[in-house]
Length: 270
Image 1: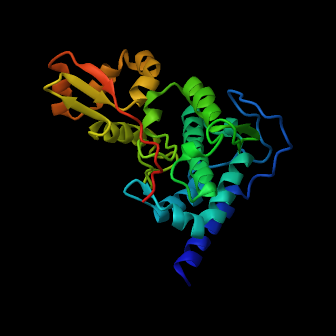
Image 2: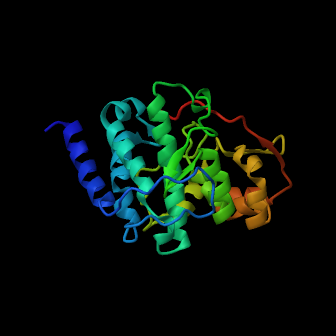
Image 3: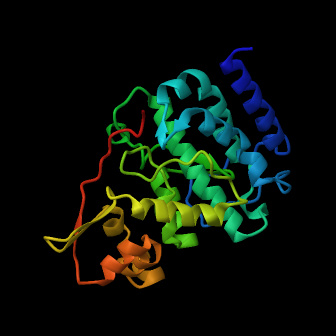
């Protein structure tokens, strides 16, 4: 059996296990509700089971945070397409708690963004795809969302956890890394913590210029400043909690002028 055949078999087994419980919903109008309507037959879903085929694909095609888009397009596109289609047959409100729903929508965002990039591959940047964030619709729980709607209207407004910004991966080099070792729900909280600490420890995202007295930051801290202010009091207070100890002490040692890096929208491929 070839590598491609073995991978397809693993994904197929996981996929059948994940989605065999659900029947397709009747068509619903496009919208951006805070919560999707229940889908009959989906109440017993396990996030770990549902996302198993997705993480099989990540472990095969993501290395060091870089995505093998060519390999995924050639060997895994049909399986990825089947997985994202399965998300339309889950009822988010059937999940046990709000934390599980947060995990569902966050991982779904990443899967949708990955699929949309693979679908248009070869490409050099998702920004070159018209409507990538605003017009291309993805279905989850019987509802259709653009990536922007899913991020801003559902994830930000409903769950209000700024750590999501270090777990959402839109396909750009300046995004957080796509972590193939993450699990759908069992270690979701730990994953948010680890992702936040990993992001701020990277000097391409947070760096001190002692001579100039400047703190150079990822533009994520500028774009989503209101989220950090609301949850932590300020970006600086968030950084004080998540920076390595030596860097946290440096942050507290003086007043810093904040400057923001340019965002690198080139594709996060290898």
